[in-house]
Each structure stands twice: as structure tokens, then as C-alpha cells.
Image (cartoon, rainbow over all chains, first blue to last red; front, side):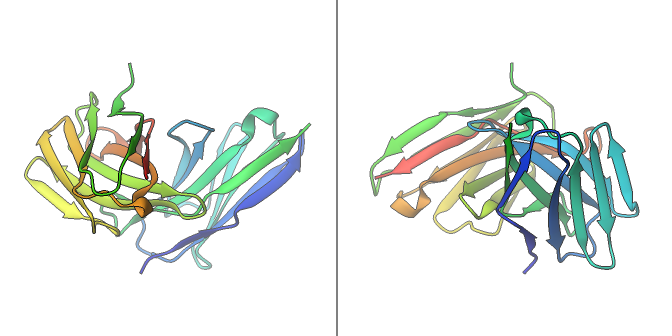
Length: 111
Length: 114
């Protein structure tokens, strides 16, 4: 079946850049997403990228998409302690509005 | 007020009991979803509904049922709860016609089956 893979943990120092990586299998996905989950909270959409784009930048966030390798990354510049959370990559499976999620990457930001 | 509201937020129930988790939304979206989240596994789709008369199984529907009582309401039932259904459950809505590609999530229901 379709699959989305992420590494489970990432630790960075405050002020550094964080890069969270994701691989996916459904080449027909229309959109790819990054969601953020803070402790005890639901999922908040951070950003998404349309599948015909290579890059999208939104303030401190940069999303890179390599369709050939089916690789998605999220770069957070000047990472702050408030960025500590779990980050989920997701794809829009078969363009049907159903999301396939990765396992989530827990980002820990140390002062 | 939240756009997607789940009740209850926390629930502890015994093995074999029937339990219903409720979700209501004020966004006017046609599409609604139920996911469960387990540590290290991400979110997995249980059921989804694209309108009131449309119900579809997701990746892990065994042991669950749903009811779409109205456009705004989508409930998830565990007919006979078992311990491996202990998880965090999320309801979500979307509507590509009006809301773009984003899915909007509730705050989650933490269910513990003992």
C-alpha cells in the first residue's frame, strides 16, 4: 500500500536550522503537507506544496519537493524553543482528500 | 469556539463496552474523517464520508463503525472496545470546493480501554 516515511526524532540547538525529511510512494498525490502537533493539541497545518512545485517558502519555513525521488523536506530557519513539537508529513492519497501520514518527527530544540 | 469539536476529550472505558465518540463542525464542509494516532505510527484513517449519504472504510476500519447524522456531525463507535483500541482519535473536515486542500482537525479524544 501507500507509505510515507519519516525519521522519529530530531534534536537541534536554538537558532540553528532544522531539516525534517520525508519520503512518500504515491506519485499521483496532488498536494503534500506538513502538519505540526504540539503536546496535548490537535494537528495544525503548517504549509503545503502543490505537486508541480519544487519549492515553497513561507517566512521561516522552506519546503523542498523532489518528485523524481519522492522526497519532501521541511526546513525551519532560526529554530526556536516554541518550535518543539511533532511534525507530520502527509500526502493526499489518490487525490481523494484522504491523507496518508508519516510516523511524525519529534523535534526537540535545546536552548 | 473551535471549528471542529470532539467530545469527549478523554474517556476511560472497560473491555467489551460500546462507546461513541462524537464530532461536530461549523465549517460547512462536506467531507469528514476519523483518524487514530498511535505513538510511532502517525495517523491512520479509520472511516471517511464525502457527504451525508457517503460512508467509506479507511485503512483500519475493523472494530469500528460510523454514522453521519448530518453534514455537521460524524460519530465513531466502538461496538465492543478492546485494549488495542487505546489511542488518540482525531476527527477532521475538508472541502476542496471552499476550503482549499487543507484538512482541519479537532483537538482529539484520548481513549483508554482497560
